[in-house]
Length: 437
Image 1 (tube, one colour):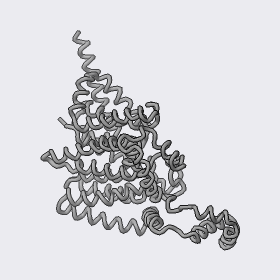
Image 2 (cartoon, rainbow, N blue to C red; image 1 turned 120 degrees about the vertical axis):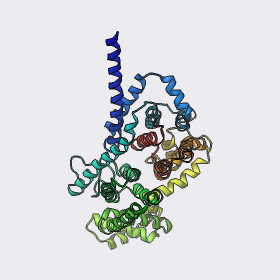
Image 3 (cartoon, rainbow, N blue to C red; image 1 turned 60 degrees about the vertical axis):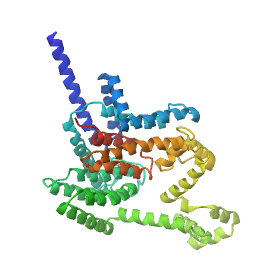
Image 4 (cartoon, rainbow, N blue to C red; image 1 turned 135 degrees about the vertical axis):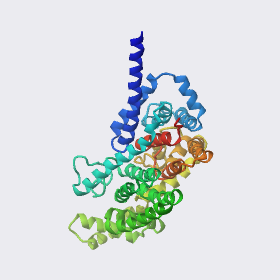
């Protein structure tokens, strides 16, 4: 009997240690590998079930406003399949299912000494990305090269696509600010400088914009004295140097300005003809003037070019057109939406565009699929997170920065549905807002 109790106790200790190590591993591999991240999540879910006490865990979840809001949003998302006429087993459900990771992490009772280690683990994972980024700049298209967007452009590629990588780098800098003190300031300042240089050469425009909004505000509000002055001075100095020296950073800024100007002042027919003629001359041996003359002699060709709208073919232009189109669509079912996993079908049917899977804006996506009710449930999660900051006497700046950061980036892409960033949301919501006792 005694031996059986000892064996059970030993197994329990091993299981407790395993879940603590898995938590740290999740933070390290989140910015590196989707496959390893998914494997860790599956094991954590299995441990959650094997630990038992399901009713007690459910009671904790329903008594916590942040967790309860996540569950309400997910249940409403599932319910919307009924009026959408869609099977519940689809790709959107697979992605949104990851929101359940937050209540699972919250009720697994990790040792509190591992909470801060998660932040260091995340920074370590980003440092691995940074090393690969510098290696890729020197040796483009190596064995670890991440294929996808902008394959042929030489910039700081990491293990992930540029839109997730830049978001992680940006928030990694904010995490470092939360850990910085007089003892580690010199070391962290070096990492901050390295992260900034990598971020602004990562080609991830959303991460770069977020960085230039949140980093200086956080430095000013949550640091003091020499730390504040040195960090802000370094921030300005490094930014100026990087703009002068690094072409990817220059390119992204210039592209953004050109995209906005093109929307404000669309090309005339003559300019569009000249642009097409220039493109053809670069691909063939004839001159630009030759193709201009050839286009003008063919009325159907001129009419075809006249119908082109290059201002909506750029990254910024597409987002602008999505806002206009989604506004028109939302009038049809404003309260409940068209149902989950319906955006691409509805958008394609209305605007003859089968390529658009989502509008690169989480709020617009939710508005079409789940309506204003879905938007309410989504924003309720962040409302309770921000409320938690104001309710506590100890003002931890990540409690305010994290939800505001996520609210902002969701204006620019589908980050509450995207795999990497939804896992990121769950992990840091748990670390920042859960009770450590």
